Amino acid sequence: MSDEMLEVFKSHRMVQDKYAFFLLAAAAAALALSIQMTTGSPLTWSLVPLGLAVLSWACSFYFGCIHLTKTQAFLRVNVIGLLTSPNRAPRDTEQIRSKMEDHANAAGEAADRQFRLLILGAVLFIAWHLVEMGLRTEFAKPDAPTQQETTIESVPPVSQDTD
Image 1 (cartoon, rainbow, N blue to C red):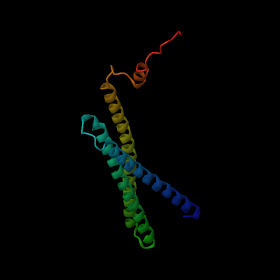
Image 2 (cartoon, rainbow, N blue to C red):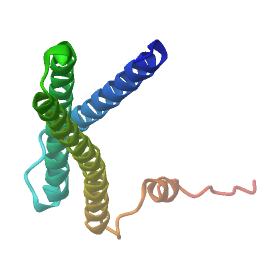
Image 3 (cartoon, one colour):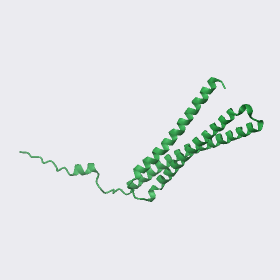
Image 4 (cartoon, helix red, strand yellow):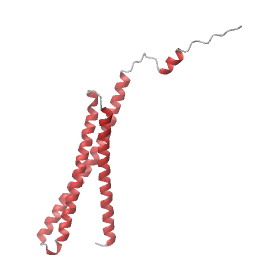
């Protein structure tokens, strides 16, 4: 492998790792936000979409960890293959190539699930927020005056003295 190709490979790996860690951080932050927003809230049916969002984010985090683990396994098998290449039988070469392919496919599937579950969690979070807004709107008292109406009505009329 030429030096130029090696640099491209290193850059590609670095970008992939940063992306995976970014998605892990996003899932963790979303979990923390949902916990912070509901601390002290009673358990109600309107929290179901948020619970599903939390489950999606937790699964996203899990698959992100699986992605990183499978990527490390792929690289480990690759290194073993490179270190033993001069002394290897053709049968061993095929086994190493097969293991590398298995790990690469598993890493790719986990990365795909990580992303999709993160997005699903965001959609469910928005759905929960809309449900909560709807419940607040539905139970608001329509006959109660707004703050602006209260301040206008509470001002006494101005008397006009013609003295």
